[in-house]
Structures are given as structure tokens and as C-alpha cells.
Image 1 (cartoon, rainbow, N blue to C red):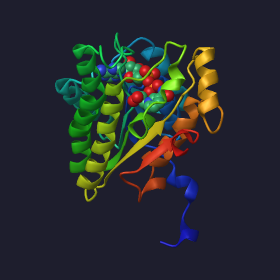
Image 2 (image 1 turned 90 degrees about the horizontal axis):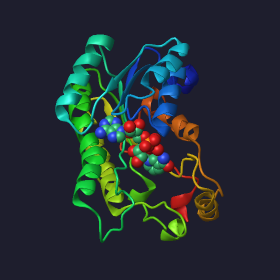
Image 3 (image 1 turned 60 degrees about the vertical axis):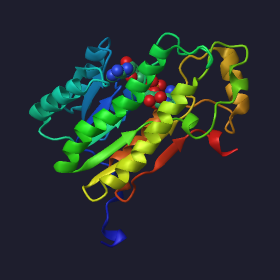
Length: 267
Ligand SMILES: NC(=O)c1ccc[n+]([C@@H]2O[C@H](COP(=O)([O-])OP(=O)(O)OC[C@H]3O[C@@H](n4cnc5c(N)ncnc54)[C@H](O)[C@@H]3O)[C@@H](O)[C@H]2O)c1
């Protein structure tokens, strides 16, 4: 079709589409729910946490869209299967899946040498296994039905190593297992992008970086010094990218990693 026959604004429209957002009560997840609702999509908010779910759903309903909340553990296959059944009963279809969950259990910041095996397993189970399972159960349904768009979330630390200078004199850090879990997600996305390329399911990544969340001042100062743009990001800056990847605006994009990092990984 000729470009002058295309309504480009409409390409971003999600009206009538049902998008499942795992980790939908998190810092970035909440802004994802918001932007999907603003573009007319039905929002399925999924989170292990249920505190704040009712208030979040009430907030989203002001956009006159359908939304429901489900509290499940994304590392449990049985719970994802029940989730899909419930969503299909309520919404009839699934058009998008966003994996915006991760976990920071006790002991997350421990040194590599002393890292506890249970903490390590928990991180791999939620971050990596949870993303694989949700793609397996929900993505496979999409591939067998009407297709759709999947967005997973690796990290800048699956592209580059954390600069250890960032953590000097503060309580922050980023463990090796986090990088490893996120590297696995990037590999999974590339695999599934090709695997489902003929089934109408596009699979892409969004990689955020340094999303501001009341960080301690010493950390923020160091971050700003190391960032090409000289500042942290905001969750809404990550959310704008989601609409591109979920909607028809990115109809020829699959396997891509949309890096929203203020230039962190390019110098
Ligand atoms: N915030 C950043 O700067 C940043 C940078 C790079 C990558 N990321 C990635 O972006 C994604 C979102 O990050 P965020 O900052 O919003 O994190 P967050 O910690 O604010 O939110 C994560 C959400 O996942 C939920 N969750 C945890 N375990 C779960 C489970 N077993 N089942 C279902 N839900 C579970 C939590 O309850 C929480 O609401 C994560 O994958 C993270 O690794 C974030």
C-alpha cells in the first residue's frame, strides 16, 4: 500500500486489543499499563504482589478501557495456564504479552564469591524461567490463534558489564546472576522471533537503564557522571517505546532490542 494512503497515527492505536503485562505493579510496569490504556488497549495487570492492585485498576479504568488484575507467581507454569484460561474467558483474545517482572530477593547485593545458591536460583527462576514460561504458555497460544506482539526485558547489563565504580560508597550493586538471567532473556527473544516469524507473533526487547526511583543522592551523582546524557531516566520514557513495539507501527520489526539508556552502552 502507498504511504500516502496510510494513517500513521492509527498504526499506534491499541483499541480493542488485550495486553497482558507481567510485573504490572512495578516501577516500569505501572507506566506500561498507563500507556497501553491511553492508546485504547485492554490491560491485564499481572503481579506476584497484590498490594496496590485495586487502586491501580481504579486508576486505569478512568481511560474507559477493560482491565483486570491477577496475582500469580510467573515462575509457576500451572499458575500461568490458569491465568491464560481466566483471561480468555474475560477478554476472548490476547494480542500482546509484556514481561516486565524481575525479583530482588534478600541477599541480592551479596558479592559473587559469597552468593547464596537459593538467591541465585530464585533470580533465575523468576527472571529467566518466568519469561520462558510465559512465552511458552501465552506466546504459543498467540502463535496458534491470531498472532500478536511480545515484549521482553533484558538489561543494559546483558550488553555491557556494570561499571563497578558506580557502586563505590553506596549500597547499590548488580550481581552476576542478574546479568546472566538477562542475557538469557535476550537470547530467548532472538530465538522466538525467528521461531514464530511465520505465525504472526513478533518478539522484541526493551532495555531500560537507570530508571529513577528515589535513589540515594551519592548513587545518582555517580550515575549522572557516567551517563552520556548526564541523568537518570524516567519510567514514562521507557513506556513510549512499548507502544511502538506492541502496535502495528512496528509491523516489520522482530528480534529487535530497543535500548533506552541515554547512551550508556555506546561509549
Ligand atoms: N528499573 C531499571 O532501571 C531497569 C533497568 C534495566 C532493566 N530493567 C528491567 O525492567 C523490568 C522492570 O523493572 P522495574 O524497575 O519496573 O522493576 P520493579 O522491581 O519495580 O517491578 C518488578 C515487578 O515484578 C513483580 N514480580 C516479582 N516477582 C514476581 C513473580 N514471581 N511473578 C510475578 N511478578 C513478580 C514485582 O512484584 C514487581 O511489581 C525488570 O525486568 C528489570 O530487570 C529495569
